[in-house]
Image (tube, rainbow, N blue to C red; front, side):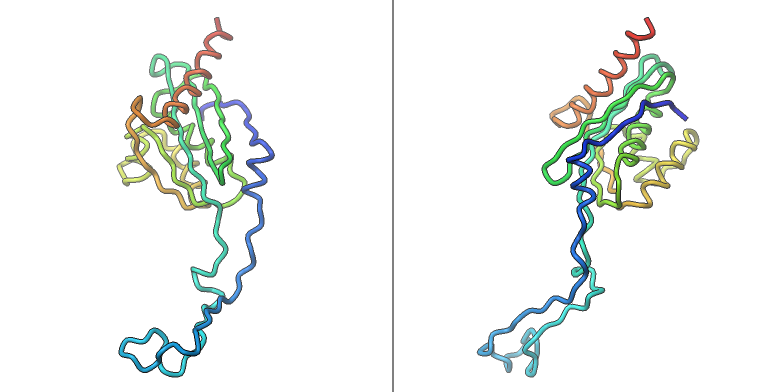
Length: 198
């Protein structure tokens, strides 16, 4: 398991995730008295004046926080020292996380970024996760056969089961601003550990 420095969410971002959703309730739709009831295909039928949505209907349930995550990993040597970068966005608030890994591979660094992004969330969320790693997309989102990094992948699976995660691939070093920023964070962490070692 790759080492990573301890990370903390800033209070403002955490508060957004800890915000309590409204209690489930019945939702009523008032229908005007003069609405025609005898037309073919009428929405409610002849005797209906009120539409009730059960409290357990999916549309009436509280919404989980919507979080957008961009991740990236970097490695010098493959294997060698590495770094990871994460950007979390929720309700207009953004938090950047990064750290170093003493010894890793490119694929492990990419997976570590995803793992630590999911670990940073304090409650179940609906997540759109963006990475430029085709390897990560394959083993996490497309069901490709897993031949290595099984421990990392198992930890990611465990955390992903708490949330609703959709994985997206973006082309690296292209026009995606947040992907570029995640890359900068990962490489900055990598350069920092290189300075400390030398």
